[in-house]
Image (cartoon, rainbow, N blue to C red; front, side, top):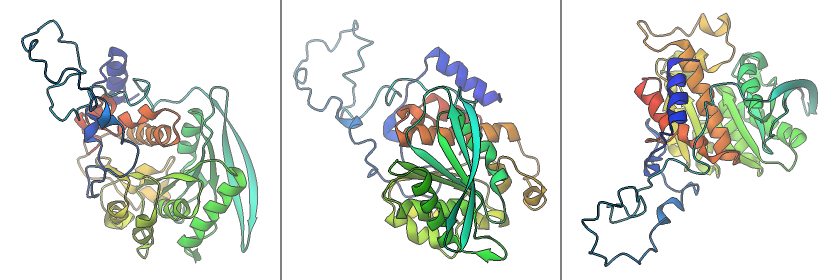
Amino acid sequence: MGAWARAVAFAVVAGAVACDSGSFTIGKDDATPSDSDGVDTDVDTVDTNDTTDTNDTTDTNDTTDTNDTTDTEDPTDTAVVACAFDDGVIGDLAARGTAEVATSTGTLRLQGCDLDYTMYTPRGGARVSAGVVLAHGFSRGPAQVEGWARHFASWGFEVVVPAMCHSSIFDVDHAQNGADLAALAEDRFARRPVVYMGHSAGGLAAIVAAEADDDSIGAFGLDMVDNDNLARQTAPRLTVPLWGLRGTPSTCNADGNGRQAYSRASMSQLHLIAEATHCDFENSTDLGCTAVCWPPLGGQVSDASQREAIQAMSTGFLMWVTGADRDGRQYWSEGCVPYDTLVTAGVVQ
């Protein structure tokens, strides 16, 4: 466990859960703020109808009620005095969950493509009803996202990872990859809510699939890379949250061109993992990536800290968007211990 993860665990045990959910915006990068996501519409109505004390001037010097947090000095009553969006505290999502993980393989026969896939299924513990489709990047393979799939499955998510048919120098069709992901979700998770996730061009395909699939409830990019403005053009049509993490702009992620899609989506968050290369969003990676995408010189953030942050924040998104635990948002919200610890440690910006 990295230093920031230990700090999160300590703070959670200590019960430090105060935050201002009004700071829940689209992110620190270049995305345009939006409050239209529908997930926070009721937090500002906690006390707006309370008229029982509006004319009470008799206890202005009352010092016996210092623990009363229902009558803040904010005249608009928009301050939320607890970070707990639902149950209160969230655990260390960078750590492995409690479920064992079973794997199985299969092939979905599509027109012009036999789509091989691996299922990661939690055994034991609570299982989340929603399914997760997780896509690898261009010219990469399922092994490059296997670590993420196993991690999510350990937290109760059933995950399917395809070997993309149109993701090589000999066959490139990002729109078709998105259609294939939606078809795979229909085959594996018929009539169940689905979250689409992906690394690099896999994140692009995830956005395309999330827009096309009526059962989609969210999309998530791991240093998503756009191509021919497909993600940028698709993002405004999304009716589900688009969240993501990105690395330092470089040739390996097309100078961070995926940021434009987030700025055009109506419900988005995007955060930078400090000093992360494109390869840091694979799990596991290899020389096929690291030989080309070099880390910055003199880096101060460890690979372990980056990995833990990616695991925790992506799992937090899944917890929140699926309803498995709404407090997963604590890893994305200013004023909440998990998020603030990452920022203070310099891992997240």
